[in-house]
Image (tube, rainbow over all chains, first blue to last red; front, side, top):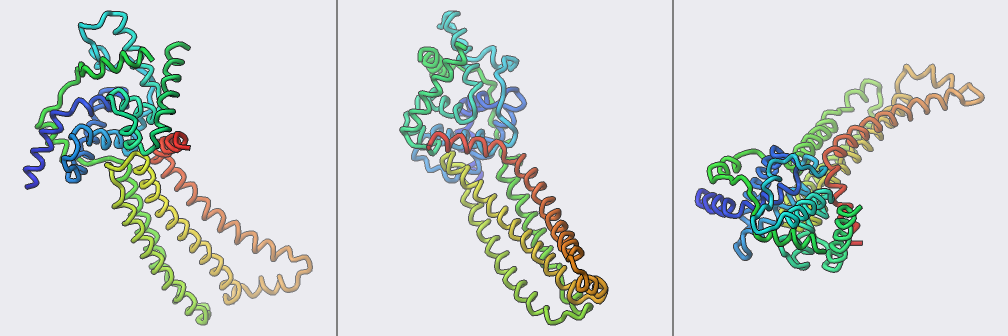
Length: 164
Length: 212
């Protein structure tokens, strides 16, 4: 039974691992830390898995545990300076469809997001994942109105970082 | 905001090129040990509870009281001891309840609140024990002063002095000893939990600020 559960979990996680990579990428600044956080999130997901009832998609359920691990449980400081030394950065979000100018803008924007604090990053992450404010407020445990207000402030902050 | 929406569009297309983790690697990860702060708080808390429980159990005063012929006080210590055990049990129960409530599937704010609450219970336990230790020290000093024959000379001097300088000196030394004792523990805890919970505290404050 537990072997079976383990199999299901491993399969689900493997198929949805990009969500976790995205969070790790956002909250760490080198590859070792990325792997370390990925492992901790995996452990926490596995511990919480028996509570997963399949009412929501695995990915939706995984957001919460993964974000909680990155923000709350992970011991090493995740506060970091924006860095481009990360090898993954080079390939990050590159797509032939984009023109060079757009790609530059996206990169700069991503670097700006990395300068935000842990909570702001979580809001932006959920926003980028196209979660609505109901989801965001439930995940973080703040009111919907306040989530909206905060998101607008973050947009202002990002603008300032991009155009000092 | 135009740039953020550009990023969102690219983000949604899922064009991230992350090195993929294989099933085998995930299996291996499942059997590794977690290093989450909850685990550390649990370990430290258990050590604290064991330490302070041991201190209050081992601290046997009966024999010493007999030695200095203060048997009359033993009954008071027995009562205090009894209350002490009840309090210890209550704290252990509270801590256990708090600990099992911590869940990563709760909202971020709730999770942080639960962790901080679990830690606070242990912190109160430590303060309670420090308070008891301070009280024991005061009682110890008082009993020494009243019953220990070696104190006769000091008592005699205090009784005959006019300006009470010696009395204040004695009280001062006693107070200083207690203050230093409590202060050392306070610094240890500040360092221990300060380091462990700095990030969590910052993030919790940030979340609370949003929801004001």
